[in-house]
Structure formats: structure tokens, C-alpha cells
Image (cartoon, rainbow, N blue to C red; front, side, top):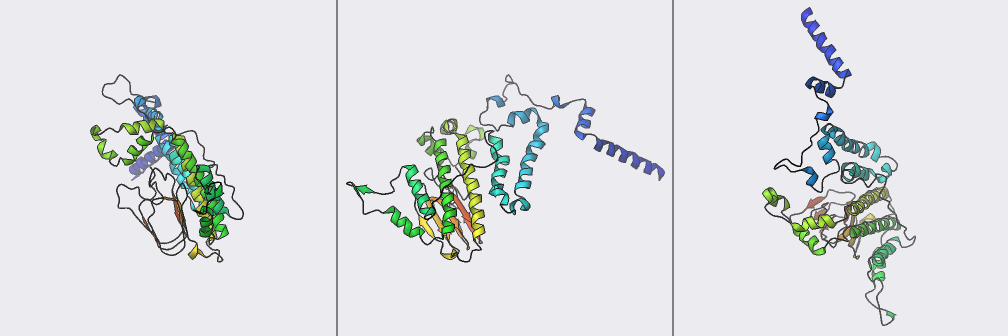
Length: 355
């Protein structure tokens, strides 16, 4: 019995000693190597080997992690910690829900920072000045003015009798509570900023190439053994301004979280007739839909912004996704309810899908 106790004690002492040391270093010492032996550095003269230096569109960390694989744990751990911290209930349940930036920070550390070093996680620089009396009407008017569309028609030096865009918009918006209008108006202006940066991103992309890319639906299946080559993908990838795309997404994301947090804070307001907060109007960059607390079927293919305040709803197809090249920015927020999200069209992006 004493013999076995002594063996156990020796094992325990060795385990304690290993814990006091760096286990990784101990292992390398036993193998007679150091960290300089771990990196993989492929040579350009290797036959039949794809040299990473000749491969475009890699993540920033790819070459460095190839050279220092011992850093992979730390690289992944940063992403995991961002989810743990910024989506933690204590962070999201604070008085300002982390400044309504939890999703923004997680997206930064899990995505944006891995693709480009030209952003920080502070904010998306959202800005919106809204009208005190008619916030939503004036926000929609701004869309017309900044996209070059006619807001007030005229002919022969006089205002036209029809169509009367402002009159129709004012009548449609009038039943919407002013505080709801203010929250939605801010988001509309934020989405306009996102739309403008998406347009900047595409300024050098040939539209015909973009359409061809849009129509590709079997990319994964055709790339095995190089079954088909799509030169338009290469051309668009060279010409697109990806940082402007990321910035547009940044604005869309932070705006969505701010809007949902604001509206959730308003839901307890008894003086707001939530059942009848309904709106369906067109704008030059997409439809704006507000839906009250009844049950709804949402099957829009042109929505810039869709907000559903409650009820058991059914969503079909490209809602809150990219339905076409002409509607590049789309946001859908559903605050409450037992909802169903469906898409049986393989050629249509489903909810939340961006192209």
C-alpha cells in the first residue's frame, strides 16, 4: 500500500510541476524543437503545390497563421470572447443595452476585422436629423432628393395636379404615432446612408457583370475539378470597393439594433394603438412597411424596411434580404409573435441572405 501511495505521490508532484510550466513548451523541449520549427512556409518552386502568395482574396490572418499555427487558438478565442461578452445578458440588459452595439461588436470581431484592418468597433457613425412635426414624411422626401427622383411633379411652369406624392404620403403616414414615426424616420435616413455607400462600392463594377454574377446559382457544385469558370466573378471582385460594402453593412446593422431597442421600449406605451400602426408606401430605394399586432403574411420582394409590431406572422421569400440588384438594402424587424419564415424558391435569396 505504501508503494502505491508513493507512486501516486510522484505522479501528483509531476502533474503539479507540469502545471507550473508551459505544457506546450515542455512538449517542444522533449521533441527538441522550438516555435521556429512550427511554421509552414511553402516555396514557390514546389511542383503542383498552390502557393498561398499567388492566391487572392484571403483573410488577413491566413499567411501569418500558416507561419505561426500556435496562434490559431488565440485568433479563434478573440471571436469566442466577443460573443461571450457582447451578447451576454448582463451586457444586453443594461440601461442602454451596451449602447445598442452588441451585434455591431460581435460582427466586428467575428467578421469585419478578419477581412479588413480599416475599421474599428466604436460605431457605424450613424447620423440623422429628423423633422419635429413630420419626421417620417421628411425622411422619405430626403430619399427622393438625394437619389435624384422627382418628389413634386410640375409641367408647363406649374405644379401638376397629379401624381401628388407628398399628399398621398402624408395621408398614409398620419395614423402612425409621432414617437414611432421618429424612430422609423431615423432608421430610414440610416438606410439611405447604407444605400449610398453600397452605390459607392459598386461604382466601378460593370452592371452586366453584376447581373451575370447575380444569376449564378450553382457555384459550389461547379467548382469541383474546375467544372465551370465564371470570369465575371473575377472581374467584379477586382472592381468592387469591399470596404464601402462593409461600411454599408455596418450602418445597416447598428441601425437595426438601435431601432429594435427603441421600439421595444415603446411597446408598453398604452396610448399607442399598436394594432393600427400600419403603413405601406413606396420610395425610390424600396418599400416601407409597418404592420400592427395582427397576424400578417409578408411576401414582399421590394422592401427597404419592414417592421412588424407583433402577431403570428408568415414571411415568404426575400424579406430582409437582397431581393434584386435594384433593392440592395433591406431590413426586416419583427418584435413579437410566433412567426414562420419560408422560402421555397431556390433562385430567390431567403430571409437574412445578402448578395
